[in-house]
Length: 210
Image 1 (cartoon, rainbow, N blue to C red):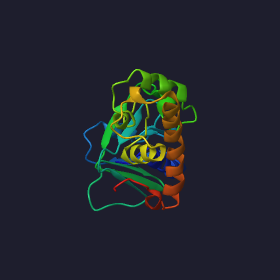
Image 2 (cartoon, rainbow, N blue to C red):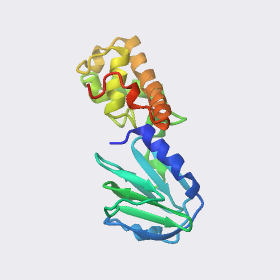
Image 3 (cartoon, helix red, strand yellow):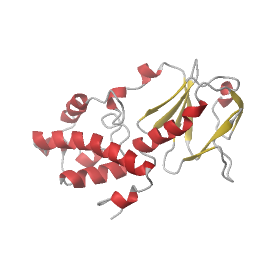
Image 4 (tube, rainbow, N blue to C red):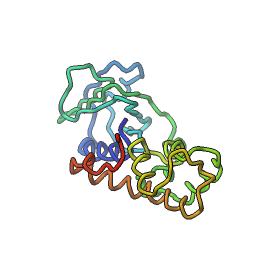
């Protein structure tokens, strides 16, 4: 499953289509995807593991689940869940969840919970963690309401870096270690982004898959 940094990379790759009109819509998704036909993309956003394609009156939310993928200006042999064609280029999404959001995104998403966001709020994360004292720290790092974008790679590498056992409870962590945990999630996410762009992410894994 792609984690937050990978979705940020997708957002950057999709940027040339911002301001462009959709001239064809295909795919086997059951949502009312045809609404995008003739519409102009006004923005691309990411929240955690969600990729958001914003139109004037609605947003298409893509979640890649466990095995989802995408192709920009190329195709796979399999039928895409959603394909958006522009005058110059195409975006194809495979094996993913596709949903339409009608409400304003600011009403739907807590941007301060996104570990990659410019408005990420570590104090808010700390407050939420303190309300989850009996939760295992490994589960807390996968809780998207607290750490949107954190997945198994980030979870494993962060806990190894700060030397905390995955089955420790949040409430058992000393205040200083809780601060370290929150800071390291943010720091590792941007390390992840840098390494992923350079195609060397796996070389930096200290414990993931081991």
